[in-house]
Amino acid sequence: MDAVFIISTVLNFLAFFLTAAGTYVMLKGIDADEHLAADGIGSVKYFTVQSNLLYGIYAGVFAVCELIYGSADAIPQVMYLLKYIFTVGITLTMITVLCYLAPVVEKSYPPLFKGANLYFHLLVPLLGLASFCFFEKSAVISVPQVFLGLIPFMLYGIYYAVNALSHAENGQVSIKYDWYAFLAKGIDKAAIASVIMFAAAAAICFGLWFVNSI
Image (cartoon, rainbow, N blue to C red; front, side):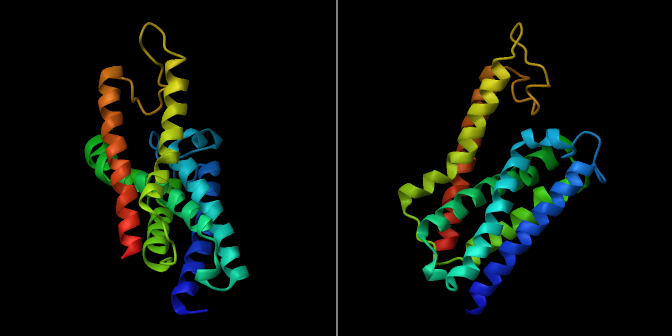
């Protein structure tokens, strides 16, 4: 095994264990901020938690397969494709927190990096970015396959919209079902935000693909 391959394996195992640690902290509500916390089993509804759980579990599987196959080139390309898709999910989470939630919503970063959020908003996404972009260069992803990175985002968007709109009363959706307050300013504003978010997600897809390929 060369050094790059070993580093990839270590980073993937580390992501798995940090995801497990973050999940434990979340379920126990340790150091959770009162309104931004990933706190308790109910937090699994958030894209942040879902994307991190998917990535963390898969990173563990990928690391075990790296040990089994023994070299980067021996790993099936479909495994790299799945790694790319899950990495897009956690990157989207981190970028949203850094560029929108912290400066715009909270106007402060500390609350967004307390408790389980430290793992899910920062540590695991950084590990995922580092491993895929710099230490998994054997991934061969075609331009059409780049768009597969949008799958988690699109599926969650459909789930969120159906769940929220199906509970609308007099044109309003309770925060219980619209937990991101995405529809608070009306469906037209939500539609515009959706287009912006789609464009951002697509940019992340191409960004990861480009950095990995150079």
